[in-house]
Length: 104
Picture 1: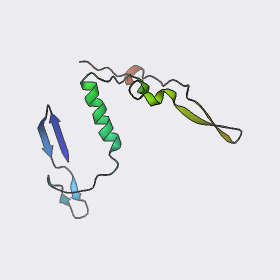
Picture 2: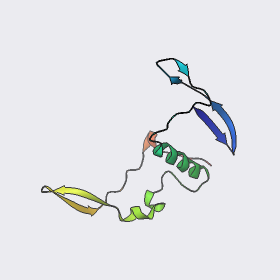
Picture 3: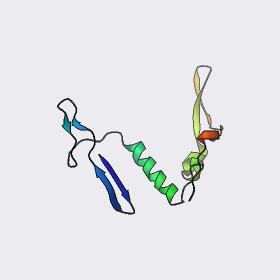
């Protein structure tokens, strides 16, 4: 299923693929099916909407928007035991052809 909305209006709504690949039954716009593991796509769409609205930049540190991440700790194995330490490594910024630019 593909649904694209812009400014509150549906601009594209198509059924793609097969409802049952073995029986070669095509997908219908009113087909009913389960959706699993949708957290990442939903959060990604929400984040991109915030980028469009200028409320979030892709280069922002996560802790800027999620304050609990400021005091992030990690487990480090030392001598066979797990030691909890502050996460002090800075995230890598994209460079070169992987750098993001968003023009408004």
